[in-house]
Image (cartoon, rainbow, N blue to C red; front, side, top):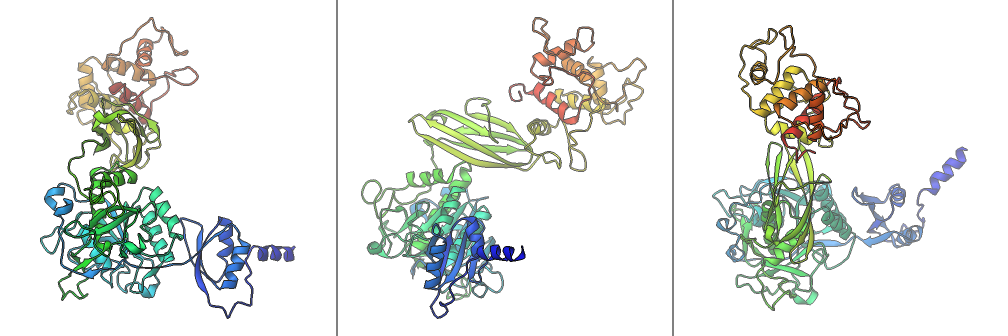
Length: 628
């Protein structure tokens, strides 16, 4: 048995030929099934692995490479390719008016809340005109900075970052979107990089929910394994902007800008003419300023301590598009990456031949204030209340809105109102425009409050509690919990309904001998008595700490909400009868849609109410159309 186990273990491993030690080795990226990759991971020559996709980097001789291909015929094998910074030259700075991105044109939008990753040589973390929120160095430790690993020891990444996000701080320059959350993904050094290192950077961007990724990097080789990571990133909703390259018209657009999911950017000068060095080709999607651009630069790199430099190239053009995309992302948080991509191209200034061409793509990127033809959703958030509004509704033939997977009806034309507790909530909108065009928006709304330790959005009644919380009708406990399954008392029930109906809740002496002025609900109890809603017990008590039964709840709610009772409507509850004092009240609740009873057709009048069940009844009484 032991020998068989050893044999099985060995068969599960790849045993490379032993006659390859004299051959020169190279690094390869292998993409295969999870089981295949697990087998390869046992080899000593595995130099890198990934989490998002089943891929490993192996250092292989030609003989070993052929053995891998034979052993794993379905595996995808690609040579690790070398990447370099898109070339640039030192020139005089350009300005933003030609793309309408001076602060007076973009106000009030500054990219706030948008996460932008600059995959490059790092960013100078000490630069006074930049605020770096975080980052990573995916290179070997000797190529990472000794202090903050993603600090820039080259200059290229810092220059790119400044075009996007230089601070509006009364010094130096200002970026297009100065309030973005800026992340440095250091995946290039002085000697360039590799597809493995770049892929690691993209993987980090995916795992850290980066909204927009700037790739001012190029290689003439491809496609390679990095394409798969870009596809995953794009499918996750990321906007990816890439420099087309600086090879002129002779070699065309370079990778990774050549990939379909990357917005390829060419470079123009101050006269809106294509620069001589800019790569061109059918993949060009937009043009942007890339000639004589002044931006931030490491303080200790050739700037005489001033921290700014003037460079040219498509590396400088790409971040202009990234910055404008960040402004649009802040302004239209509901927009998918494909819709923002469409917005960028449709609002560009057509240059060259009419329509898309190989030099300027759809045209020079522009930030536009007036967006009056594209239908879109925006939302307002206030303490659990979410108001979703359809803009440019005259251009919409029909729209269906799903909130956390459920279709919700509009409160009025183009307006939806939803209540939810803290958490991330997914919205999907399916449009049919008047032109016949069909498209979909998918976005998340992050609610901060109300937040309870024991209430999550997955609970079917969470929206009812959020509604009552927003309207200050019900509150959580001092420990941050809601305690949904705890029985609600008579005093709590009257206080809750009193708040809902606007009764006077000022603490005071009451009619009841067991409710003093110091009791939290004394004011509501006395107001309810004065209004004829409650009468108490024959012994002169109210018994405020006694749990409320479903029958008591029905009587109280039927009176306070003046619910109608129609005897002609059949009785839906088989366990109630006209002899019960609560009979008509229970019938009124059922006829008003506040309760349907239990699946077995009973109402169970003597069962005690919990905090969550009472909350559901009150929310339905308050908003019958919303909570059905």
